[in-house]
Length: 168
Image 1 (tube, rainbow, N blue to C red):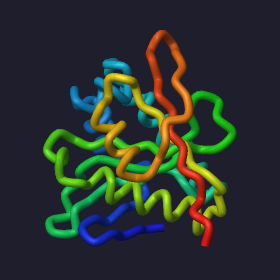
Image 2: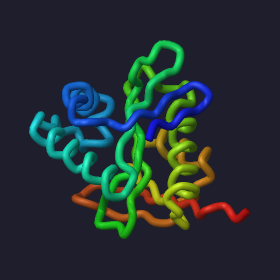
Image 3: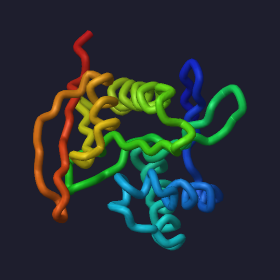
């Protein structure tokens, strides 16, 4: 299930990628918004990878590494994942600081939205982010997503965005 864009290759993350994914989750920039500042232990990422393997096998989605085509460097990850007891998976992404302000989040997320609508047959997709995460709000806007809700989750203000499947 490798997906490609003009500049990026999206490769499903597999269990042998444990250390690379753990490095992303322990990056201070990624931790700030995705992990509420906490450093996830290796075991937690290992459990996440086992769930990722199950999701790809059973539901044909999960998390993909974002690699540049030019040098095959991993810039972060993107995918569909279950959060906040939502009825279907949400769009999620995380970029390392070296990948910021290059359009990678928008490019990779656009490909995942297309995959969700065209391959998985989803009628809509949701994304969420912490209220202070202005950059993710900008990505949601560039993707055409509209803010539909704001709620407090575990003491944090979370914004929810939605995009309905385009009608053909």
